[in-house]
Length: 430
Image: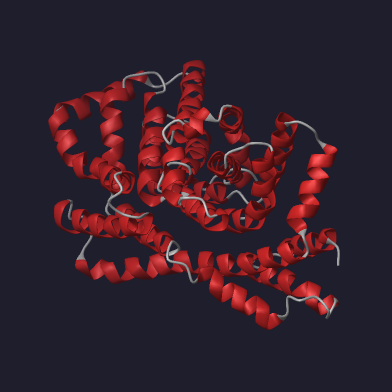
């Protein structure tokens, strides 16, 4: 059975709107159903699926999801935004830049792009609208900036890539810091340019700025201190060698629960059960996708897909630059049509040997892959962040996508720098 037929079956099932996990599972069974001599029988695939999710690092995903829900219900994004607004509200494009910075910091808590978009957008979009900003611009801004949630550590896609490639998750987290900041800066440059060109309501912005400053810096800082401290505790424990990423995730759950329940008092004891339910509902589909993608990856390996695709790329394209460009184009396309988790599990075993053969560090490649797939969060038809932004604003997905194009261009510019300047990803590790 040819590899081309396998992928045609997969995309056909996806086009029928069959859930991703089921589409991948059915595609995994297809080779044996069409050729009973193929070694990947149903019992074999089931063992692979169970073994794929029997992983200690995967616990970190559930725990970071739970921590993110606690932080979202606890109004942490509001407190982060107030700190950045205190310094930037009187600058051109200051509040949009504050939104991007809030997404950066909130991403260091939730590890999820859609969660960052929802938590930051639900709080900042109404405020930006009240201060005279255009609704479509606000929706695009938050949708794209929310993608930073999967690049700034701790990142759920980094955990999945580490599991698929046997690369240290802690090193991947460290490698994501500078690229995440770089992308944030590129987005802020466009935000400032756009606001300077279209203008802002300076009177409303001045009133908002004065209102924040009446509270005083120490009052704003005191209110936001524990929110700002959360990524320091989570990431500091990992980078300091005190905990593993999974243990740090458990600490983040406890920390977010304590500050939301006892310090900020923004959630009640009676709400905890529903928060656990929400976290499980978010995590369960991821788990099914991971199980199915693990089995599919094993099928591709038995079909020698990594070797076949590697030979095709290296024989068709010569040189490190051209191969990296081709891989980036493929990843951008895949990010547009496939969810991040299965894309990582399917493509990592295929591309990792190729990039290692041309001298690319697998940690650096992990960052390249996640940045590419993060762009997929804001590109149709899969663009999850676009749907979150549409839900928050009632603006059609296509309209948000059109307004997001300049932000996506800024994102891609940063991707080019990250791809061809390895030190951006590896500086903190080296």
